[in-house]
Image (tube, rainbow, N blue to C red; front, side, top):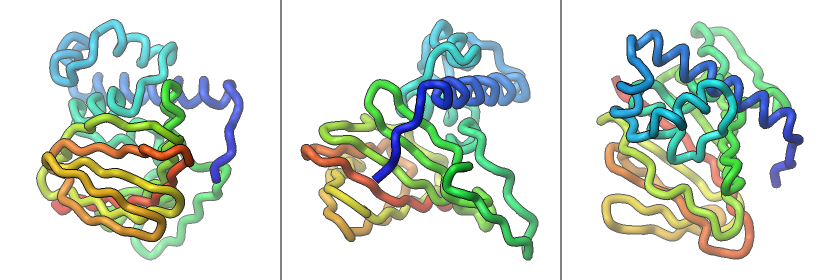
Length: 198
């Protein structure tokens, strides 16, 4: 099970997320209005996110990442990928974590070098009776594999849903809207590998 952290750390994470959104937006040469149009997130919300005044939900954060054509891990502040042949360690206490303050959903980057080899690994914590809602499609060639570590997970994909129990695995092409839900009264935790073919 995950441990809950204090508000100060949450504020730091919201601030870092906002700084990364602004940096990527400026690098892409986009105004707040243009990013708002691309992401379907209001200009006011984007402005608050960039200033670290508002922590977005997982759905809003995903739409921003897709509109900027970067991974959610890039916006969370994932460590840089290492050169081949170099060992990299990421300590548990140093994991970049995205927290959805409204639902308690958490996304921990557990890859020591996200993107190395075209893949990254993330750990998700989904509290009881919580759903991510539908998340936007990833670019073609993106694949997701997951294994449920605790609890029960329902995955919505392409108009169908699959319910998975502890130890069950799933592979899917992530180029369609998809979502994750915990419809039980116990927390759910799952490990996911996201692969991007170039």
